[in-house]
Length: 554
Image (cartoon, rainbow, N blue to C red; front, side, top):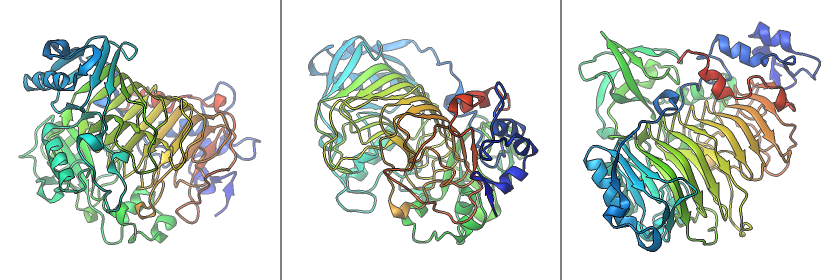
């Protein structure tokens, strides 16, 4: 089947609007001045089932709610022995204050303006706790040690000498208290402790009910039994793959290309299955449940669909108004990070960070088996980092907006690597919006991430993506890059119509292949869409996430 300017004829024929909009621009659909972009008009008619663009209007904490809860101050770290002049280790005092607030049911832990030396990591293990500084320009935590020193050294998921602190763990670590205890035990046993929502004990989680067939985008599902379910419960929807890997094919958009792909030797990818999607139940009526968000995928009997229990999540906790600065050390060789890491959310739901800067870190902000969280006004700066942002191990529905990756202040040492905004490991429906990237790239790190959006971002495209071959494809279906302003003209994973199946590249600056050059994982027609290429200023709407929120269909 032929293409028109990199747009699948099949995709165009599916929309009379898009066909009518193809103008004299080499076949690339464009909008007239003042009009919305053709693919947007098409999406607005079928927002939950569009073949190339995912519905991400409900991404983030409480389906994108901007308002934060006002929590009274229940602890001041100075009252617990912290010192604001950097002269002594304040980590024990901060951790005591955080734990005391959590044990009382939550509240705000205040860190007044000043510099606080921390010789240990800060653990937020209780729900409903906000750790709040006086602002990122006024409150600083100065970290003197790394996670290797504080917790230990252990290898990667598949052995070898690689450090797992390259993609896990933070010096401010938001993780349920009980889960953190199992993490440290696993590390001491040299085991891999970062298995999404259910850890290394997936078989121990209890099935609550099985689920009847349903379609992507549905918010109401039918289950076999509701006796163990309650309104407001957070449950896991689990979908297992079958021997023919039809679930992985579905995540890739289906069709001849995914069907021809050889999945069986992608051992890292298949270890991520079952696909686990946490979601809250908002209504129960007979055997029908209404979910907080629309289904991310079809539900089919061959995938053994069920709702299960999950690890007790960290809910409604936060970090606000501070800078975490690590002691200045050279960046480590690639995959040998010592663990000068920033802020990490693990098994966290409806949590957030606001006005937080991390400096001189190996890895900046992380989402590990974390869903429905919002990061706003976050910034990574200093000597340069491996992963400024990482999103992995089945993290879904997160929103990262108003973010900055600043130009490094120290030249990159030999044998180091820079990625950028990372997504991998079957993570889906995550959004990066309103960003400034003075370095780095869009790091789709294999592991078949799907249905993720990057929108309204200015990027000096200098990094490289990563990903082990055993992790499988770079992209699943419904990846969208929308209004991406590339300041240095480098293509690498910006314009993805030649790489990502059933994807949309809309309003991408004119870019040229050089540096890291990829080939598509799937053969044949990728069913991709390319609009407003070379003219990001013409895209209407300019921000895909904001526009989806205005559709009033959440």
